[in-house]
Image (cartoon, rainbow, N blue to C red; front, side, top):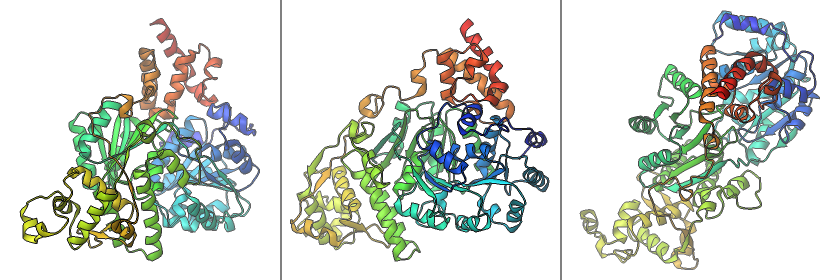
Amino acid sequence: MYPEHDFEQLTKEPPTANCKDPEQVLHDVFGYETFRPLQGDIVREVVNGGDALVLMPTGGGKSLCYQVPALVRPGTAIVISPLIALMQDQVNALRELGVRAAFLNSSMDFEQARATEYALMTGELDLLYCAPERLIQPRTIELLHNASLSLFAIDEAHCVSQWGHDFRSDYLQLSMLAEAFPGIPRIALTATADERTRKEIAERLSLTQARHFISGFDRPNIQYRITPKTNANKQLLDFIKAEHAGDCGIVYCLSRNKVDATAKLLASKGYTALPYHAGLTSEQRSRNQDRFLREDGVIVVATIAFGMGIDKPDVRFVAHMDLPKSLEAYYQETGRAGRDGKPSTAWMVYGLQDVIKLRQMLEASQGNDQFKRVERQKLDAMLGLCEVTQCRRQVLLRYFGDTLEQPCGNCDSCLNPPETWDGSVAVQKALSCVFRTGQRYGVNYLIDVLRGSENERIVQAGHQAISTYGIGTELSANEWKSVFRQLVANGYLRADPDGYGAMQLTEQCRPLLKGDQRIELRKDPVVKASTGSKSSGKRSGQNLRDQITDHEGWEALRACRKALADKQGVPPYVIFHDTTLFDMLERRPTTLEELGEVSGVGAAKLEKYGDIFLETLRGIGQA
């Protein structure tokens, strides 16, 4: 919703009106000295009227690739964004920079929509954000034909892919922009797309002739860690307590019930934890998301319904309590951590039941054979990342067609290299047990048979008499679970598609069962109490605050920022990012000119907030 005075601001002359140089716009408006790799090339391509397909990791600066051209080219840039709830914050952030921005979507009443349309028609907007379902309406198309447009930016472009994890049918109709507005450059942007998805984006959005800009997918500041699920709730609590107490984070769960239970658990331990899923009312979701964006130290526990377009820079961890369906989903969700480039953690627990559940969901889906085949490949790639014994980052990047020559040194496989063992004999025993019991039983029952349990169910079934009864006492129940998990993950066993979880042999297991093939298995690490040491994943400089020596000064700057943000009803990072405050604290500027050289302080913010922050800095010095 827009207060009336916001519409008055739209008519003000922008600070970039007489500035047509991209580098100058970058410095004067956004407060940065130079473009990041590829940003400058993309900006120049679009400024010169060319189309572009951009793949850049979350936090890599995709938005500047269309925001700078929008301020250089004449007319209004139309930004297609899939989430109405986040447009307000994007628009607020731009207005703080002195940019004339607005949005047009179904949350607005008639008067607000009319005022925004008028601002567009009269050339008083630099950028207009619009949801795809609103854009494709005939009335909106007619409105755009009568306006002066600088470019179209299609954000979260992977939503056009029917093979993707965030498919939106409204995106399919965006191909008409090429025909309806042939002279207007178009830029499509995404952080998550393998080669198949990139090709589909280009075809469906009529961008086959556009220049493709593919940045490296690596997020070196994110530490990737995946561990077997033993007691997921305790593991999560130990992880947060040891490494991220007081930090902002996101916890992903597969079901709504698990989201509610996990949020309640965290809240009972003193954390500010809020649920987010489609079962909540829109008001509850909006309120919880708003608190996450505006408050410090909030943890959101969510289904995959949460996160697309989240621009909060200081998310220090993303935790997965269940296995994602694909590496695309995993990469995008973990990419919401550390957008400010500071050290962050992507932590996940996963177990055999995750594998069984996702495989059963896939086989029970209504998709055709081709769809299921592609989804199986995606799930297999996700499982491959979980069970790999080499650098996880190398495996993740390879999936997206990127390469890392040397192991990263910042994933659990690098920090604590996993042991492997020759599991050939144990695997033969496990597969034989599945066969001897008729392929009708789940993992826990099979383990009981292998370990010679005398429970009543085994006696009634007569399985004390089979050859595999009691032949597996050399392994613990947890070690057998690891064996079965890896067999399912690698396709040697599958779960009964009818949903009962019975293990069934696949054709792939035949060489193992006959002893013609040997197999190395990953040895699960021994679970230890988390200590916050390097061995548990904690690294020096894990948080920005660990690098701060003047804590009183830091809190004074944050308090100043929070007061300004509360007064204007925007998240604190819209005023300045943590990295900008950190730079202020390091440089200790004493004049407006010196403050203007701090990274992230553009002309508009210098004029609005310069004197206030200089006064705060002087107070720090006196203290």
